[in-house]
Image 1 (cartoon, rainbow, N blue to C red):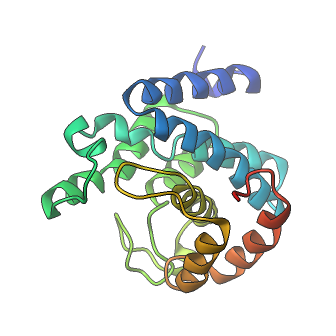
Image 2 (cartoon, one colour; image 1 turned 180 degrees about the vertical axis):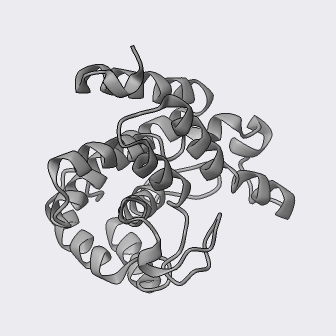
Length: 200
């Protein structure tokens, strides 16, 4: 049986298995991905995505950092800022993630894999890996980007301390129209105030 014929529950278990594998390498990334899944679903609903699109969005959010499996521990787990060559290697994780998703042959595979590949594109065209701009960036990627940014800043990491909700929102506002789609960000800023994933 190929993965595109699996029922939703089995597909969910496959997704959990792969994120657990990533968790053995970097527990923070696993827990972060789990939160990004739920935030992305909330934002996807607010953006009017239908039930089938929400399923694909959840899978894409689950896999958005799966490419980090291929990043050396010396870089992935580094407690200080990256050197230029290290940052270039870290940036490959989105394309690596796309390759992993494509190998799974999931239902709606193209939507899911492109959502993973482009979640670090910037609305102004200055992101990576392809420097896409505006609505050329898949909507799933634009949704995941916001949720990824919020949770990333709100969670402690070896190279930065956890920021408060107020501090994170201030950064997101500065990134409006630059890193993030302004219309989708407005929806996020409204829903996060009542979300269970809002940080203190």
